[in-house]
Length: 188
Image (cartoon, rainbow, N blue to C red; front, side, top):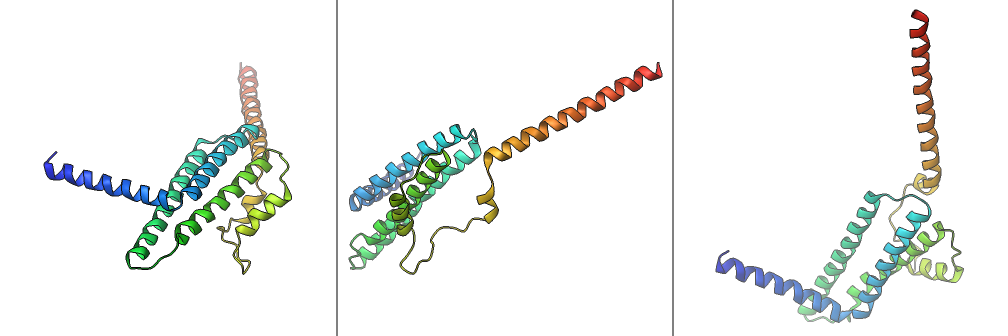
């Protein structure tokens, strides 16, 4: 590695570390709460998959990728705020705080959803508070719209249906092999 490459890597590392330190220093509490909620979401997601017997490593990996994407977006918000500060404006940390707060509420709703799917009762006051925070004053919902059929899918029911179909298929194969054996005995 040449001296210039080493210097470039050091500069890039310093830039990344400086950016992270800047971001954490601006909204330390909000970032800590976001990380804590992400941790709780992962734990409740694992518990939900264990309780409902619906463990899927692909879904788990997709969740981790989404969590990394959240940090990319919080980093983008920090970069935008840094740019606004560098041109002489004072955003009062609202860009990062707004972005982080949005994802905190999103994680909170996900935690509640996981708990509800495990059969735990959800306090209405907590659900309502998070739901209200998730909407803007005009009442618009900020979540991505899911296809309605996804809300009607019950994973346990799908697993039971799949098991029943597997059983029927095995029975048909067994019946076919029994018929073949009877035919071969009849020919002898």
